[in-house]
Amino acid sequence: MGKFDLTKIQEFIKKMNFDAWLFYDFRGSNDLAHTILDIPKEAHLTRRFFYFVPQEGIPVKIVMGIEAGNLDHLPGEKKKYSSHISLTKHLKDTLANVKTIAMEYSPMNAIPYVSKVDAGTIEQIKSFGVEIKSSADLISMFGAVWSEEQYLENKPVAIALTNIVSKAFAYVKEETLSGRELTEYDVQQFIMHEFNARSYFTDSPPIVGVNENAANPHYAPTNEIYKQIRKGDFVLIDLWAKLNKPDGVWADITWTGYMGETVPEKYVKIFNIVAEARDRAFSLIQHRYAEGKEIRGYEADAAARKVIEDEGYGEYFIHRTGHSITTELHGSGAHLDNFETRDERLLLPSTSFSIEPGIYLPGDFGVRSEIDVYISSKGEVMTTGGERQKEVIPILK
Image (cartoon, rainbow, N blue to C red; front, side):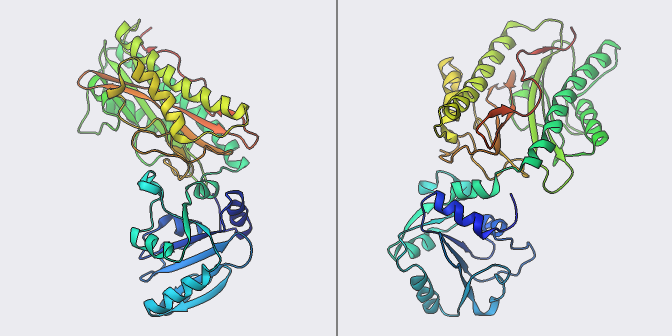
């Protein structure tokens, strides 16, 4: 995650064994290219542009004559076009002797997050005899890699989230035993107060779901829509936050508890399945790195999903296993997904992602157990927060 760096990008292209990376945009259609090329949000872009970065040598900027200055902040030779004929000539000349290029494209739209180039443009580039590969891993290398400073700044935030969950459960216990009424919204606002006290930023308030609301993965209470929390209820809390700074990276965890002194077996059973799925995915990633082997997002998802499917609950695991974490909560790196998509991107060193399998029983309750994982530059696979949840918390114990 950083400013445009030609040397770094060319190193990435060489590492992936591509001849070049060809960026393309039309009227803001490729936000990934805008980020990597440092194009400001207020830029006036009404025509097509291409930015060709070879593995070695000088880039080429192909720009429309009436918007010829839009890429002036980038290095390279400028080629101006006006007609579609002149655009085609510039592309043909630029791509001469080039065999393999990367573009924001995903075969069969397997990874829609990176499919930013329209089919017609793909056909046009292929007509020059060029093989197009997905730039998905290049984007991860550029946009999902954490700096050492970001990792060190994230650690206390991640640990604090675990502490805040514990404080939230303690608050629920105190209010309940004191005979005061308590709602999902009250607990949500308690957590928001904890965020504010630490000057943490969140893009939306946390999830606090009771019973059937816990079975809705994206449920969140409001000051108008909420349930009361009573003895005998199952409670799910999902919270996420980061330092309030542009280059801050997120922490995101989910814990569950039961409003009683002991947890009924039906909750214990489902939690144990979910926790095993979570840990199976983590172990696979850890073992692959220990063996010096690559691991891709869809493989980690498949490992977690198999645990849940083998226990007969596959139909109730209704989302991917995890998402990339960067300065965006759902970042531009590999997701742990072989369900919503087939994410074939590599889980790279110096990147982070969540592992959060779940089982959601409509009208009854849902369990999700979420941890954040960071892979160091040396290939150490670790969780970033406090201790991962090992059992449903008996809140009133």
